[in-house]
Length: 323
Ligand SMILES: Cc1cc2nc3c(=O)[nH]c(=O)nc-3n(C[C@H](O)[C@H](O)[C@H](O)COP(=O)(O)O)c2cc1C
Image (cartoon, rainbow, N blue to C red; front, top):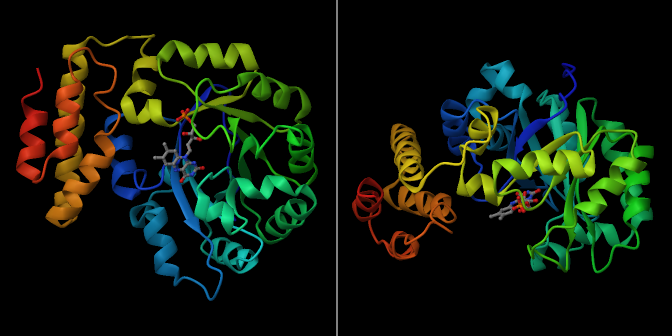
């Protein structure tokens, strides 16, 4: 397996988001905003019976990525598993495909996932989780990282979870500063990210409630974390990493509208070149636009009409007429 260079201090991670951060979305982000240091794939669920064909994993990771090592290097592949799933089999497959970075999702709050004792539910039993993490580490030679919440119902096991992941050879830990019960409630509790930094020998990536470029430095400074992962704030402003690198630029409403138009022009062009169905194009465009107009003065009716649009021309005429 190709060894990856360490992730530099201050790196910005575009978070994994199910239904959003697929190959086409990541390609658009990479083209328009190469300032993102890491682009994460949304999770791939480990099957509880049988295995996926290789081509399924390759499609999830992104076909082109296999041809472009430097993009491969900045792409985090993610698995979502439970004790019932065939984790070792899938990890061996990821190893055989030489995917150099694999993250394990230990934070998913979905009721179905937790009912099946996966995602954030794994935090309720650290002894069993240790076994699972160990089995992944033993079968994977690439960079193995984990993304956790600060607990399930409470934060009692938080410090032990950080120590355990360190003990088991996990190379980096993203801490989403919420419990499963917190779901996405604000504010994320950054004090736990700070505590993780104090306890961990391996880099901690801070995650939760980064909405503005100034929040990035605040997170780095207040918690001492190694890098910052942004989810909804990056969906609202996929250009936030570029703005940050260019110096705390706070775009005006007009500039934001221009950025939205530019983004959707590229995204649509790419999806159409990949022969996506009309239905798929509308669905993806709506998902991706969900947060973009939120909080912009006077834009709520536009956001609602985007969400209610029934056809691709209707959706894109709203985008083109933003002013
Ligand atoms: C629509 C959506 C989908 C998500 N999908 C994933 C996922 O596939 N894997 C994962 O680890 N986290 C997933 N998350 C969680 C985010 O990566 C992130 O941890 C969380 O939203 C907190 O960050 P934020 O406050 O910046 O949004 C998802 C979040 C959202 C909003």
